[in-house]
Length: 452
Image (cartoon, rainbow, N blue to C red; front, side):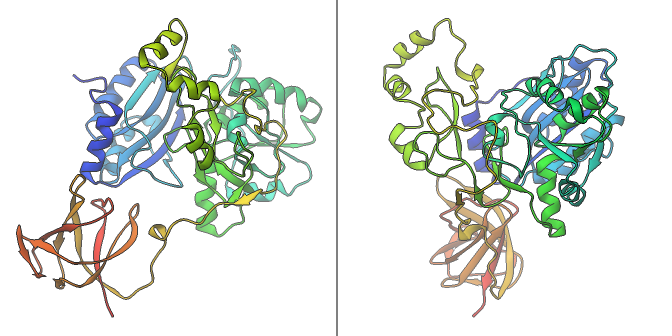
């Protein structure tokens, strides 16, 4: 029975590209009493590995915390693996604001002491006695109340690129640090203020709200589903965003845009920027904000010292790291004297610049078109797409539109094609056609003919 990954991240990325399937990035959590976390972990690995599910998951006696990437076509089968457990029946799956097929490249399920490290050893603390959940509109409304104190229960490198206006943003590197700081800071407001909290997907606030109720705070509220679910509700209900900037996420994307406002700076040159990177030096891996110009000049490094290291022979780099905790075990959270424009603690609510609008690939194209068929495969190395014609007729010289959730909308003029493995000028209903496509397509893509 396979209970571990057999492919490297690089091999998995190639397989994902070759498959050409739309993948969804999602997250969920549940606090529950799990008697045997190890068996629970192994059962999940077997079920999810069979569905080509990837991600980073933590399980413990107190529950599960998961961030994952799954093929869109396997979504319902994936839900079924959760419904097996009573405490996950009907669980909310937070879909990412921006999907990326490479958000996760391995399936990693780890057994931990706790799914959210809190540093607490109080057996009288009931993690299920939580605060009031607020939906986006309710959250916006309570922020207008002068008796409200809003607290960001994320870390400094998360709040720096985006936060709710007027929020307290603790200058901390871990969740456990923030609990005593906020408790001390708000000791005199246990009964007269609304304590309103938020985090990325809700899991940290779930525990924090229970903690502050345990500490005697009377009016405790939390943003249901975190910033991820907040953004979804904004779009569905046409609400104003009280959040400004970008939402940091713990996968290969390192962030998803909530508003077009850039509120942070490149840590090296000070230019408005909110793109995180990890230092290229395997002995450093510092997480910091770096603009494209500095990324090029510094080769993804945080300092001239690290830049020098990456140009050393590999054997010398390894020797320098001997006996130190380095590589993937290090995820230093953006604190260094070399970062001249790093900000944390009290943060501004004003934008320094506006993010560039998405390229046309992501925009809806309002044109007259007719559906021809669907994508069947994409041959990455040859840059050739395979399509099945289900309607109408396709001819050389036609302007076509390839459209899908991730691909966006892309137009091109058909110059040559293979019809049922033979060069031809016309394809009809039932034919399988291949032709060069200078961008990656997915099985969720449709092909249309543009009408004059």
